[in-house]
Length: 297
Length: 251
Image 1 (cartoon, each protein chain N blue to C red):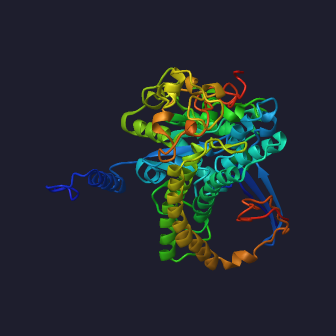
Image 2: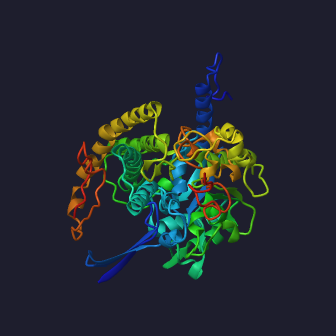
Image 3: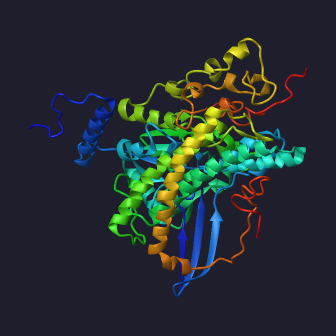
């Protein structure tokens, strides 16, 4: 049988045409059930819900692409139309199926998790702690998205009244860690694409994909020549090396300088110091973020 | 007969909230709202370098992080006795405006529209079992398209923010005295160009869409009433040259 979507020569070989053809083919296969999109659950736990906002900032791929062509997003507190019990029913319905779990936010553990209630289940408060355990155990893959999910992040900053911890302290299983505050949309979507196409990406010994987290910011910083020559900025806004103002580029391992943010227009060091938001121990071990008095002249 | 309705999670608000309603003969007689997350940001500031507040308080909220950096900078300026130049204030407020645009677009389309518009069957998150959907099919379709189009617009608003703020959410541009790095002509014209696209969308689609929904749900204007006491600290107000562009502090 001739495939109705087969393209006869001379076919348009422009990138746009190829993408359009592949997209159409994938869509047809999804529609007729040949291809099944994997289910994705995005849990917002104890944090600012800024990683889903960052995900909405993805340019290529963007959120529309992820929703329609990459996965079937089943649960997202910030985006889903359903609410109340209906929303929680949806969340529970995936437990019997295969799904990928993305978690943003830390897990508040104080008072049995009551410092962060994410819904009601059968009339009782359903805590971030319960959700992390319940879904974390059943998921086919777990991705900790952003600083809070990775190791507590800002939610666990001293004195940590809610006794927040990272996801891996609660869910004892292999997981992919994507530190960053927030996580860059490409770090998540690229990891997700790798999971869908080729399985778990190669990780370093801290469970971060080497694809994004292999190189120190300092090693690819456009201000590096100033560091090498010992020319340091005395205030923010100078174009030279910000090391003596407290820049954490020398200890932070991620592709920020080459990837850049928000449609690839700028990055933190384009405005001020790096505060080490993608490094373990952020924020407590990365402060002070700006220091005007490291050297005295 | 009394009936209790509890809604938790209240989705699409960028955070966690429970609404607990008591009804008697189809009238609401009591409502309790509960914010169900506690991290203790005030206590986190104790013993930390004061400048760190500008960055750390942004982590209170992902959709409005810039507002927290602005508030921290204002507090530090007050404490340090720093006088901000007119230019510094304009630049910082321009950066803050970018976030307002992002926030308002996402609030309207991603957070509010799904209560009125049935979204296409492309993802499970758009499924909803019950609701008060009244829009004619054609109007519904048009607004659903705008839901997706708006995603590009809110992204552009954050892009405009990042041009001088480094990144969004959680910017690096806002600082004591205005912003951390003065923008050049290339950056300013880039922001102005992006703004033109967003403005066209808001004027031609977003505002008419809101009026359209208001038309089909005009009875909602007469359902329930708050105490009517509203307070504003003001925003984008009392500039020396331009006066108030948005709202004065008032009760």
